[in-house]
Length: 247
Image (cartoon, rainbow, N blue to C red; front, side):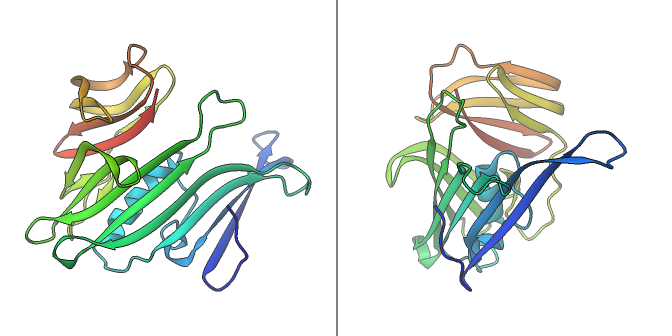
């Protein structure tokens, strides 16, 4: 997905080079990444998105919801070779964000996201729908719903957030960033640098398929899980973080 550039569409190109040694005197061009979006979404992506692009987008949208300054829009990310115009373009990520009127006249946000599989990846493209809406009498919480299909098959996996979930600040107070990191992989879910915490692995039907406590640097095996989408939720020190993964 690419569009003609105009005053409402912005594009950022990032060129990656690899140095041959620590002196950084000589480098070899690797690839270029283009981020193109309508102004409303582009303003949320102030720098290159994290490894988990979808989570980064949801985080920024949740942050922005309290500012009442959201705009519907589209976002597209792809890799290309600027030194070879005929080289194939590798799509990385597409997203569209729609604003709808929810309960009490507040604005709900529905994001459709497509993460494209690598050429050498056996997995197919992953399409997700996420709905964010305000809840609570004081509009001090955001509800995050993962949806399997557009407005259908809503999962019962719902996060009511008032402090920090998906690393999103959802109150006027400044929330500390989690000190731990969550890294999904083929072997399992790796959690690094975490104090004693509780975790859950939740299927997209809302069932808890695994749970327990962890501490330190651990890998939680997922080989016994059936193929499909899951959400990994960790709670520690009064903070909660959720990461979606595919097995």
